[in-house]
Length: 287
Image (cartoon, rainbow, N blue to C red; front, top):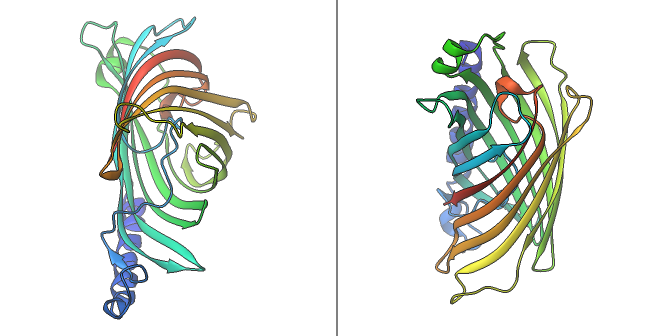
């Protein structure tokens, strides 16, 4: 991360702590429901189940379809949303904190299972929820780095992809089963500088109201659609179907076993202009 980008995020975090400290002084006079909370459990905006770039822990096997370079691929992510502070606003609740993640994928057919690319992602989210409506605003940084073995054995023109972006997502829970969401994003600083900045995203999720094995297993499904100005507004499709293992004592702690399908431009930073298609199986952890 360049020094100016690092300075920006440090300054933003310092401002956040200053605002949090100023607003927390009178919280002891309020009820438990009304008071501002430091280190809350609530995140308010639920994870997007089929979004390939949602910060969480996961590991997946992916079988690339009709690809000249890759066949058997392993993909991992290491990250989480960590809320720092929450309070009341406009009849609902809001929270802010930090999101961070590393997204990487590997060529499983190589002798040493070569790392192909790793994307480093960090952002500051502000989430809001009122009843069945929720929203998420974020400012974040992403930088991409090719694996050493991949560079040694492949002659490619490396792209030093790095950018800062903002995005806004709105979500609505429909009855007990369905959720729909939509959003847009804009890259405010990027390298290379010629990348077009606009993007859009929408999707739908299904969580079965019916559970099994003493309320511990729930069928789930999700579809995420993303489109980029840089890629001529072609849609990238990510679909997942499976079951969710739940801890009945913790709303946030979940494990998802998912069949996965993706078709579109690669979500991996260095390969953003490369079209891929794969089917696979993944396990996803949320805390």
